[in-house]
Image (cartoon, rainbow, N blue to C red; front, side, top):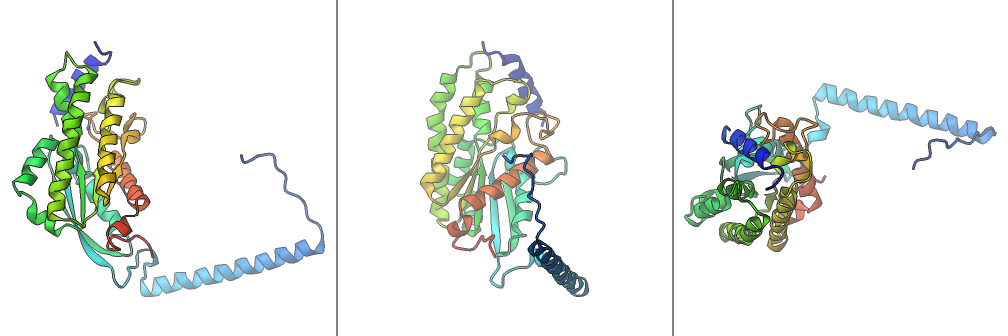
Length: 300
């Protein structure tokens, strides 16, 4: 039997209550007259820069200008629809906010090309891929999808946990390998249903992590399972062409930085901060501005 069986059971019970530079380099000493002249010139430039900076400080104080958050003339409001499980809902966030979604909203509103962001969080605790697919096929989110300029999805954790709970004392990796193609088919159909309503909005596919790593301080059989399922999601993002996959596995390999909630299963506010930071970094790296035809722009 797997070494972390008892730890798995404990986690399930808890979760039910609520996922060179050479330092010796010596600078050469310059003693000629040209060095003195250069130093005087540098000093003069520093004084000029200080005067310029002081000028802008005065302008900012007088006119109450915020140069860092100025908007472009063509900045547009965007609608952000968040679908998925408890990670989308923000379970574990002691600030009682919507986890990474509210943080993503706040960060996007700082971008020069975005006037404002309206968040519609439709995450639900325990939601699996089959459940979200059923809602989409019944047209449950048709109106919200049609209006969305940005969509995020978090799925997978509860699909894995269903296998764990149903086979607690007889688990084998084969069970997860057998279910993965089915999960992949459902997730792909989720994206297909979304694209039938909205062909343009970029989709952020948020991966999931191994919550058992915090209880068992060693590599577990769940590590390759989580990696394989996340890779499957990543390939769906590539196939869609207007989707970005966000990996978060490495953000929750331990609790040294206190990233878990007290249930040791979901992120706390610090964990959600890091998720939001990773999402922003990924959006920039996968060129979300081009994907959205300039609507979601972070450049000047």
